[in-house]
Amino acid sequence: MNVPYIADIEHLAADSLRQKLASEGAAFAVGYNNWAADYPYTPTVMAYLAYSKSSLALLFSVEESHTKAVEMEDNGRVWEDSCVEFFVKNPAGEGYYNFELNAIGTLLAAYRTSRECADHFTAEQLAQIARYTSFDHAPIDICGDNRWWAAELIPFSLLGLSAAPAKLAVNLYKCGDKLAQPHFLSWSPITLDKPNFHCPEFFGEITFCNE
Image (tube, rainbow, N blue to C red; front, side):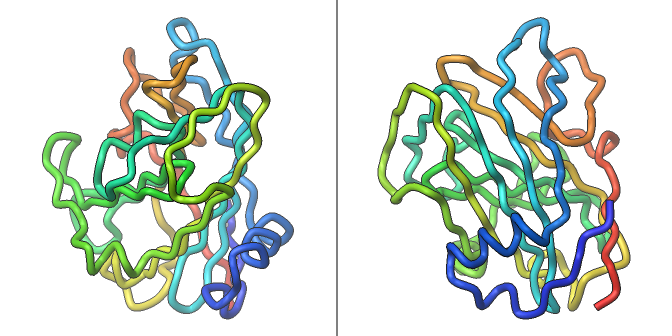
C-alpha cells in the first residue's frame, strides 16, 4: 500500500487534519476478524495514512455499538477500552514499536522485543506525539450506534529515523477487551489460535510516495 506525502500536515488543526487525511490519505480497512468464532462482533473501522518530512500521520474512523474509554493515564491499560492501534517493525534494527490510542486520547507507546518485554516511552517522548479524538479527555461509556475518530502524528525521529524510509512493515488494529462485545480486528490478517497483536511475522508492508 502506497502512503502519500502531504507537506506540513503536522501543522494542521485537528479538524483540518482529519479532513485532509480522510480525503487524501491512503485508506486501510481494519476489517479482518481473525477470531470470529469466539468474538463474532465486527465494528466498521477505516484507517488513513499520510506523511510529511517529519512525521507519519494516522486517522482512524470507527463505527461501533459500544464505546467505552476509562483509562486516563498514558501507558495504562488502553487496550481494554475502545482502542485503535498502530504497530511497526523497528526500521533501524530488531524489535517493533506499538502505539495504542483509546477513544479519549490516552496513549500507550513502547519499543518491544516481545509482548512481555517492553520499554515504554517517557513522558517527554509521548509529548512529541500529537493526538486528537472526537471526545474530550474524560471517561465515557456510551451504548448505541456510535461513530468516532482518532488521529495521531508520530515523528519519524521516535522510530530512529531522520525522514520517511522507502517502506515499513506495519499492522493496524481495533480492539476493546472489556467492551460489551469484545473484538480484535486487524488490517493484515493473523493466523494464530488466540487474539495476539504482538506478532510482527504477520505485519504488512507500506511504501512511501516520493515528495
